[in-house]
Amino acid sequence: MGKRQIGDMQPSELVITLLISEIAAIPLQDTTQPIASGIVAIFTLVILEIAVSIIAMKSFFARKLLSGKSAVVIKNGEIDQHAMRRIRLTVIDLIELLRSQNVFDISTVAFAVIEVNGDLSVLLKSENLPVTAGDLNIKSEPDGLPLPVICDGKIVNETLTSLEIDRKKILKCLKKEKLRESDVFLMTMDRYGNTNTVKKREGRKK
Image (cartoon, rainbow, N blue to C red; front, side, top):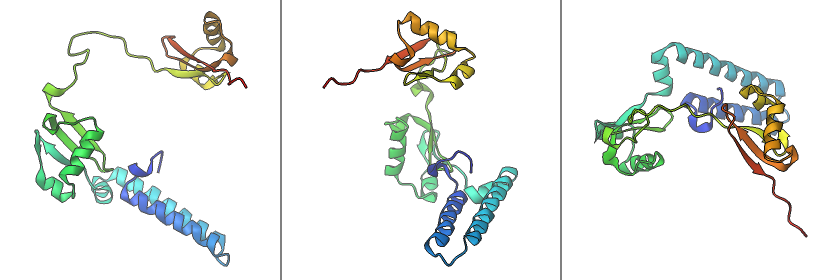
């Protein structure tokens, strides 16, 4: 099923998950049942899930049949009451979903879509969209993603590889701040070399 959480599963995936858990419990609860039969059943369901996923990827009709489709509940600033009745969504539910997207005034919404997994996607009206640097014709460098280079006094080698730097650069930064590796609780660095350091706190004195 990939790296999905329960809330992101499609209906068929949730059913397969529940079936696997039930089948796995049978030989554990009843010692007379051979474990092999449970393993065969579980592998059959896994193969079935993979096959269904491949079919859904290749066929739009199968994907729509298995997973359903998204529903537009606000269109051009107006609530589509027919669509809300079809998916059995109340106005209170809609308002709560909007609040989860930091939208507290329904009149500011141009489009709102209930996705297949139940999430709400919102597009605000143009006059309510936040101003961006592009709107002001301001050119700016893309922000660097801060990654942890030291965690709990230990250098994270995987991060050094991602940033394409070596330990010497980290030690040089520590020397500049007059710190040792063991003194650092967390240090982050982005691709531009900007760092942020959190020192370890000393334990309470008895």
